Length: 446
Ligand SMILES: *Cc1c(COP(=O)(O)O)cnc(C)c1O
Image 1 (cartoon, rainbow, N blue to C red):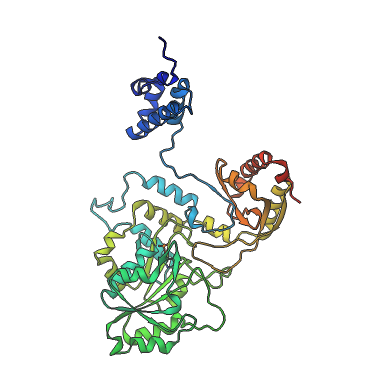
Image 2: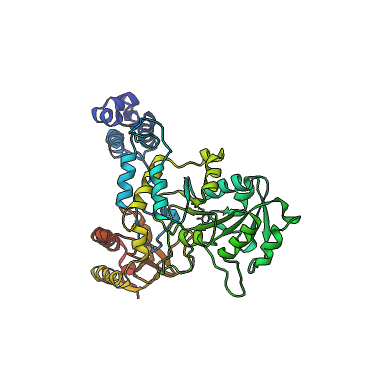
């Protein structure tokens, strides 16, 4: 009797693995990737979702098109420059090249002339000092949070650090600065109120006997929100005087990593001014407005930086060679993509936006971009967007490369601020394909 069950026709694992194209593709992949592709195709055939005749072709296609990393480059059409979900700052060409070159063996911790071990990542450190001449020394760690934790561990220990209640911020994804500091064992001495903190609040907190355990004063830039109305805060320069009188280090977390004041971002503190105002240690992130890789930057006095570098935790939060390479290249080369996007000329943006909209038969509207990512909370960046139907958002995310847009009411807004102009033609053709595939009623609103 002939067995009619088509599942009997499903090729076995050995047969599939022996197929020449499977073998060739498998030679460059991990065993678990190959196993999963084979088993997945067999399961689907058993469930009747795949013709047993097609199993072999399915395995071949899956292995030949397999991407070893699941992260995919995307087009940022949101107008949000430092977008945390999209990896914050896109690296400059110079930084990307430096990462590629540092990927192999590299002299990250070796003096090629003497053949001896050298200070790790000294090139990046020197580039940061050159870009920030007001600092005596610098240390680069894994990220801003790590920088803060290291500062708390090394400078505060089991003592107390004074912070204003208006600066006890949550940055994003539930990351709360006070909890991070407390986790190092340091005690928080909160002063002032949510909206107002005065010089005398700090002065009485650091005065003995109550302030006997105070080891440092911390000022934090509330990056992602703004307290308005009846408010008052103590400027860095005044805190610096107070700290100097008590011989306490003043730590300032500026967050965004702006090197020098930027008129386009009037409320954003920068490293140079904060040091000039007398901060002993300034902390910032590498992948926000600095436009570099994820990193924590610590700049300040030589004695404080060596105290931090000598602390055991420094090893646990040290930056890797790819970060050091990218950061050095970012600091040593021209304007970053972040700077270009923040300072994009509104008229040039308008022309690009209107040209693309005309090709698509879509409308344009004024649309403010934003810095995002814990920087420039309230500063609008004047610009333009193309108005698309909301039904376009999902298929645009499914495009290759995926295009991310901004949802606004029932519109899907495409903002070209963060799209390199050279990519306009491919964005245009991807959007056009998506619009053509939408049902006609959706395509022509109103
Ligand atoms: C972003 C930010 C941090 C955290 O920095 P990461 O680099 O994200 O770890 C800390 N403090 C402030 C003020 C920030 O804006």
